[in-house]
Length: 617
Image 1: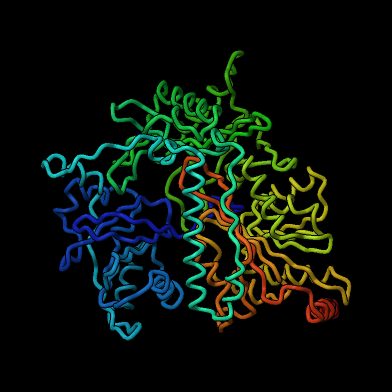
Image 2: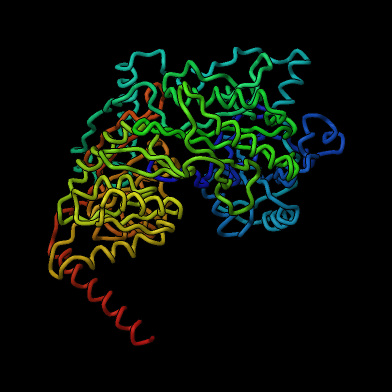
């Protein structure tokens, strides 16, 4: 995934409900709020005073935001898609909701809001609103019970079914006990099955796709050069294990499942020695500090998490200490930061590793519109450096960089091979992040134009291009939806009039995939004849694959793209995740007189716009 991981995207979570076996699909637009999901019994519309006094509802009285207070239930919806309902609320009705919770195969949903004013406006708007032939009914709904307190209450009452708690290895490396050849075969079968479902659906949607589907080739899953110790970024939780000891490691379950236990990471095969040392050293710091670990039950404590970024090429190690500061005075916060500095400033002569870059991060509820909690520099270098395909990349604390550095070399080479650029090719790198894909392509093509929504990532990309002496890359900070058309115009303008235009788009979006507006912009840009889609979550991206390939429509104008070749790369050994790369081509992907004339016409159009602008000024 060539994008910044901190981008806020809708998160879909399946939870077991409080009073039913029906799974709940929850969409959150505020990713910092604890997930507390449940189905309320019908006929109960509000949270009573008695319930608020109960431990299961004590979180409602904390001096912190939770949208569970301002929740409504919408009934009589008939069959609906969660995406279309969200569109109705946010785009059509302009309702400022924070999350939607919808039980599977039911005709109702729960919607949460930030304020009582928003809740009341939603009730007034939705009650009696006609949608898809149904008249909606809306009413206030009670808050869900805190799942951790609920589980404890069940245990006290003897109603809890005891389950063996998973270990950290089982939670994070479910395939670790399987031979690597078997892991690859399992992933090959899974990707083959996914691609078959995609092509079957495409056959139903687009009869013209059949000859292209018949030629579609899946080349299987390529192995990772490094099977163990490959992760260069890890985020650890500070908490306690089953014995009550302070531990820096991985959570064994989610809060919504009633679990807050943390397990050590020493036995995890995918973590490098640097990361394990970082967890041990931070654990030592927390155990000797007067400040205590954060406890999600009651939101008490201070030390919350530790992000570790490491470079196998340089040996550099960056630590970002995540602190919950709401319970600290200004003087205490200054003291805690100084404790962090002093601890990591002491370099032991025989230390196995050392921290070369230290940051503080205030990890608490984010303000509306804030994508990520900011970081504060404390000690050492401001960045670390890693190497992919012989190119050096500066990595800032919050910038995206491929988790598996050696695997990224294989991944990018596959993308280059599928795109088959020449010295006359312009590459559009959509979701370019810090420019790793762009710079891997640079020596193989005419130029690369990249766009990324996070400004700091663009700064890193420009620095990386300069460091590596690359002059044919240009980067833009902004939404891909807004820049695709202008990037295409700039690319076409760079060609001599009458010369064939060869434009290839490379997309490496977040786990949720590209927004449909980006898909529509790509399809409508007729000069883009080939597209390489790099997906870190192929199951989510299948929706994009369909949108690229479906027949032309009012929403998706322009000739469809058809799949030609796919290959997967095992970027995440010992886990169930796989990176998939697909080459899509237009049905008429070869250069034609039409594309030649487009270069001339669009260049004249741009010149006309420039002349008009000059005359106006």
